[in-house]
Amino acid sequence: MSEVAPAEIREICTNYHHDATRLLDILRAVQARYGYVSSRAIDLLGSELRIPRIEVHSTLSFYAFLSGKPSGRVVIRLCNGVIDEMAGSENVAAALCDELGIQVGQTTPDGLISLQRTSCIGMCDQAPAALINDVVVTELTTDRAREIVRELRRHADPKKLIHRLGDGNNAHQLVQAMVKNNIRREGPIIFSPINRGEALSKALAMTPAEVIRAVKTARLRGRGGAGFPCGLKWEFARAAGGDQRYVICNADEGEPGTFKDRVILTERPDRVFAGMTIAGYAIGASDGILYLRGEYAYLQRYLEHVLEKRRQDGLLGNNIFGRGFNFDIRIQLGAGAYVCGEETGLISSCEGRRGDPKNRPPFPAQKGYLGRPTIVNNVETLACVTKILEIGSAAFCEYGTQGSTGTKLLSISGDCTRPGVYEVPFGLTVTEMLEMVGGQDAIAVQVGGASGQMIGPQEFNRKICFDDLATGGSIMIFGPQRNLLHIVERFLDFFIEESCGYCTPCRVGNVLLRERIHRILDGRGEPEDLSYLQELAETVKLASRCGLGQTSPNPVLSSLKNFRPMYTAAVKESSNGLRRSFNLASAVRLAETITGRKSTAEHV
Ligand SMILES: Cc1cc2nc3c(=O)[nH]c(=O)nc-3n(C[C@H](O)[C@H](O)[C@H](O)COP(=O)(O)O)c2cc1C
Ligand code: SF4
Image (cartoon, rainbow, N blue to C red):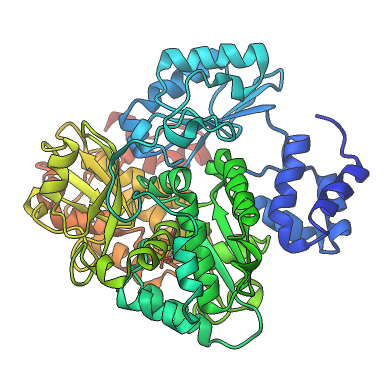
């Protein structure tokens, strides 16, 4: 790695107009140039951007993909998700370690390759997967892992690892990824063919209030998880004062098991960008941001190209369709932080800061990006908006149920024969879903990602929709060979890793929950552990500041409710009256260290 050159740092800052709100992009650019962001680079950035050094450091230290320490020229980030584990990622990790001669978290002595684990990268339908710098490699085997290391030692170029391209636009010259779309069912809303200008032209012929009314009449609910009525959110933003408002499209897609936004952006980006533009017209905004998770950086050049084409065709930029409406979109790349999917964290991240969630109110629709009214909508929600304008609200309402209109994209993975993306009308039962994907022998289904509900066969007659089983799109299927307690523990691992650490219930509570689950898994559980888990999980839900902590105990609570016999069998009273959780050897270890002699513990 070369020495930091002040002129180069200045040039990078100049590319972003010395705008400190673009710090995340600037840090990414510095890291791309030098491999990491050194202490000297932090000093230079602080003085170039006229912000305190601590602010630069604060942002740098928040994101998993940014580093203040040197790492290898090539960084292999192996996905740590539970679905990847089920598909053999532990063996792949062992093969990588063996071939590289290092452990996870280390760099080869020649400084060429670092090996790390990372949270779900959105490839559960083609697991095990890894990111190698920005290049996605999927369907890894131990043999392929060894070959990858050998190839990288030869050319150190992750792009050359792609020997076959994925389907659809994954093969586009600006994408060139081995990622597969795995679209198993195309429905009438999201994946239907698109006429790029139709919806926008219809919207611009209406008043903004009429556009909002159309979205409200379609009863469109947000597809990002919470299901908030889209038209109402827009109305709040339009009603908020001020001269500038913003539209943000949330493509952070970090919930384990979710990968449908990746496929929409690959195959129907125009439908999303048109939705953002219509939203801008409706609320009175002239700027939009697509927040693209860092894991999907491989799509960035292609999406920039789609935006540029829209500008050339008069669908974006100044005086759209000659109707005096100006709107443009920039892409903000994330850097590996699940909590940035939470809308207030997302906004901070777009402002170049740490992605810590904020207290609400004020809600983003009142005070969001740069303190201005802002709407944050999911990729799929905005794609639905475009379709509503294309076909009309009444036609949209013909799909789905009374409370959940339209279709839903499900990203389905785990123990089934046909994992992938399915566009289905709301109201499908879990049994129907399992038949559709070849997962009939499931013993449990996790609906709504790690933060969702774990349900058993007695609930497979329930419907997938907002009024019953809500999901942002993630469905993970577990067959009879799986240990559900282990899966609960792995979900807690995820939340512990991704918590921003601001509030104690989330930062500490999830660790305590995991400890207790681990103890039960280890055969040391006591019957009272179940009430402990229940109470602690409820406390974490209640006392956490943001949606991450408020939903992280869901796997514990739903599995306690739906798989009670599994827990009670694991925490039976011990027959000799001794507490199974008490480990005498470890209890006397400290005393042994202090006194310098062995106690009787070993003989007990
Ligand atoms: C920890 C956390 C992560 C989230 N991640 C996402 C995400 O990746 N994509 C998303 O659209 N919404 C995500 N959300 C929900 C957003 O905060 C927000 O509600 C959503 O983007 C609103 O869009 P919608 O109304 O169109 O659904 C997340 C929420 C939390 C608490
Ligand atoms: S609940 Fe967790 S992620 Fe949310 S603010 Fe608190 S510590 Fe951060």
